[in-house]
Length: 113
Image (cartoon, rainbow, N blue to C red; front, side, top):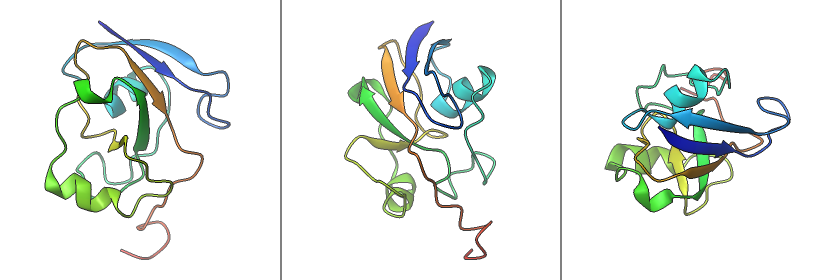
């Protein structure tokens, strides 16, 4: 199991969390399995940015992002160089520190799809 530290998020994880996630699991699935209800409007199909996270530590251990993910990330609120869509980022053996941004852009809910 890989240790994943989730930094505090006002709504989803007010106190932060230390999780153990099986390598090969996406960050999104790992969060959901541990009752951190990160939004995933496209049902984890890499079609939105609602599951955007910032990987504060361990970024280089994740699988490489595909062009489709990179294109979507350009639309994410609060994009940073260590941003990933959690539905596409696969946990490896290296511990991670994850920040869930305060805001998310949900194009479908906002009628902009």
